[in-house]
Image (cartoon, rainbow, N blue to C red; front, side, top):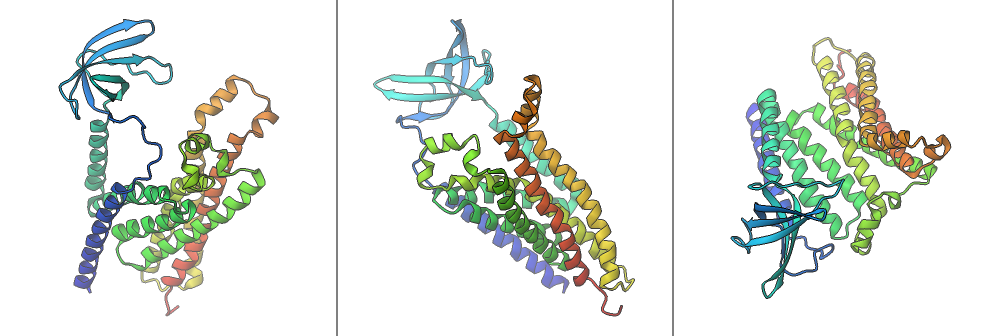
Length: 368
């Protein structure tokens, strides 16, 4: 039995690794021709600042291009200092520039951003290493699940939506895929794994139901999100159902909390059922519901705070302007945050007792 389970898990990792390769190929070959820079020759090379001058509220930089088709060229790069997007490069510093070659030796160049990609890769690698070191084998499996989640979202879900697929349906299917792969990688092919997957699916179903109910009650749709006008201006309305994107974003953001709740309840119930105490369904369910209530209490608070935290600066701004309460509570952005927090939390809350019932039945003692 041990060998067959071990071989089964090896097959699982091989298949999912090949699936990730296929996803990367799919994403890399998705080109819908929307939102691209219309100027030929546009690129974002690295450049090192070798000279800096200040002139009438802007910087004029002499930058040596270090990568791309124009490597080695010293270009004059303009940098306008904005209050909300300050990039203030110093001499010798490496930056990213937006370089448009216009032909016949003419070009347009301005500062795009600091170089952050290397730091991002290092931080992400250290994070995965930390998970692996502290968690041991479980940590390595968890890190693998995170990589699978990242690849699936970036190279499968987003390209599939860009190709014209239904955002809501694709997000639900991808969420179930991510949940299944992550939980199998961490917990293996056990009963509690399947119960957790089913429990998460129930939580997603409840989220879908209450999203429809709450969004209808608040008169909120995906058309109300701030990014809608930008996406519509890029021409996405012809290929993407933009009104579903709010639904998708909330589901992705809350999937972790829903999964954590089901895993906590299922794992605790499995431990109780494996103690040899010969607990029947009712006895096991009573204990399991105690665990579920604890999980609901902490997870709901965590989820509400997570969504509120994304809105924190806006709340401070409202306070500084001393807005009228009636005007404030009826704002569309407040309604969107309520929709996000409550619909996701309801899905997480209701998946806990559902998981407790399923796991109690799966691990009940037939002798009791």
